[in-house]
Image (tube, rainbow, N blue to C red):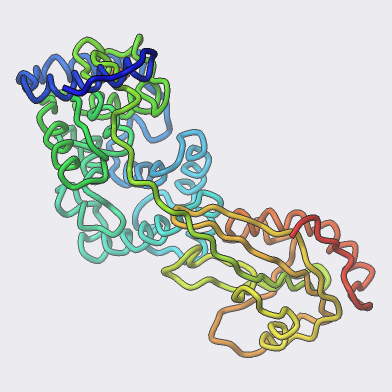
Length: 400
Ligand code: SF4
């Protein structure tokens, strides 16, 4: 055994960790009492779990599907208004399938991770074409739809039918890795396979909805990433991480990802109170949403204007804008371009002039919306005064 020097919490944790590893190697965890685990989760959920959310109390797979997709990577409080607006406009899968892609993106605008909306729309059309408009309830058929993984399919079917299906979203991975003492990074294939086994082995036969919701609620409210509230946890008594002091170590960290930086030049072209926007290609970042004409880092804005077929009267820099995506950070360098007339040259890229007053209702990424909101008062003043008749910019960059 390793001899550790010194004292203190870190060493204490290391000793505990060594004990845990030795302990688990020397004596495998005894067969789990499935009923005891699931019963405690179910009882806890009924009293302390989250209730009254707009997607609860229904067996409509369309509503359940919509909520599960919106809740991926997104907090409940953020999702609720988007969910209600979306459902009011598209009350069933047929309405969504018939919808124009622009309108779907507009209603998703601000929720982020836009591939979800594109997949949702594509899946609705598939449900109409392949399943006669009835959302399937066989788990294989659900998992076969665009944008639906194994855990999401299981959650939809479990909530819609009460059939036991194991789920394993990010929060549930954390709960089960800690409770069963599963070591290793949760994105590793072997660890994932082990966690699926754990999830499967603990499924109850009855009260599946409360159990499924309970696991989700435990992960979101008590068994949080940092500082889990073990004192109030219903499964603390046999939780390996709690018993061995390993809540900081489990689950294992994913390998650190190097966040790349991408730079781009944006042209914020204004003709009075109208702004020029272009539709971003899908698939791709913000695919299907409307944004400013974008060019490679270092592009000369004057030359870029010529490519757009516009004659600028003013060009000036705006503050640099950064936006974090999962795999990279975007650093956009916007230039405000004033033009006299809202003209357009022919292009393969779909472009349009849109009134600034209408922009907030359009399918725009959140940073674009914010920039336009900041420009709107100034643009409408300058529009009234027919701005853009002089050289240079009235916008001084705050930072670059
Ligand atoms: S006891 Fe603590 S670490 Fe274990 S499952 Fe409960 S909240 Fe998570």
